[in-house]
Amino acid sequence: MPKKPHVMILGTGHAVPDRVLTNAALEQMVDTSDQWIMERTGICERRIVAPGTPLSELASLAATRALAAAGVSAKEIDLIILGTVTGDMKFPATACIIQDLIGAKQAVAFDLSAACSGFLYGLQIAEGLMLTSGYRKALVIGGEILSSMVNWQDRDTCVLFGDGTGAIVLGAAEGERGIIHTCLGSDGAHVKLLYNPGCGSLNPPTPDNVAAQLHTIHMAGREVFRHAVTAMSNAMQQVLDEADIAPDELQLLIPHQANLRIIEGVAKRLHIPAERVYINVDRFGNTSSASIPIALDEASRAGLIHPGDLVGMVTFGAGLTWASAVIRF
Image 1 (cartoon, rainbow, N blue to C red):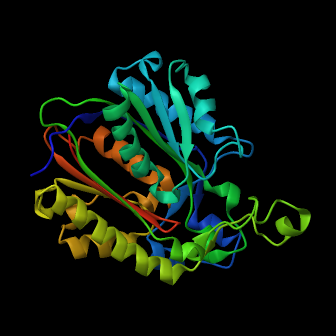
Image 2 (cartoon, rainbow, N blue to C red):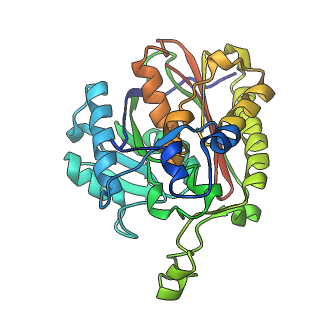
């Protein structure tokens, strides 16, 4: 039987840059076409930050919107977790910068690195800390400025990614509403299917390494696609099985917005009809850890999620990592 929820989502928020980079604009930058991109990814456009914009600026805006939606002040937040691989700096944690920007003076703040799975990893960690360590209200944020590590000459990757942030506020559950179950997974044997080899201790940012584009995203697209469909399908089925919930009981599935073909493949394997799968990858591209909280906030504000609804979330990212959750709103 599923556990009784102890933690629930009180509010959601997201923030994306104003600048829209369309497929037509990309045609002027790299050897690609709108048809080529659409057929392979389903992406029409993505949002890109203005030069010099740090992640903390965008993430603080998403956090402020989530706090407003929850009716919670920043002073009430005692835990901030940011899932990202594109923080403002190597250190300190960007979550600490966000803490200062929003005025959450009582919060413990840290970043975690799980690539596209960062938000759902953060969700499970926050729930665990709230249950075991007495934190009462938490901010979980997923945010990326992936344009900072895209190779704009590599047509296989530069068409995929966008910038954005999403946030949720967590608090004590009410009745049956809340986080029912979460699952996490990883497989380090496939690290080099999707990675950024530069700027760490292995390949520090020397002039030679920067010239060799070691600071950009490297991806084996076909292999990533294959692993993503399998891992996401299995992860979602696992969390549903362990919660004793059938796929057709979900009112909405919010998958990681990496690629429309991946989303369609996962929905097909789970036998979830298209009208119950939330999709915005066409407008934002792959925003990594931000994709699920952005989609969650959009769906919530559009009135697609109602009190009592069961919502599934599932993601997959570099590591390889994957994660899933089922929540009653």
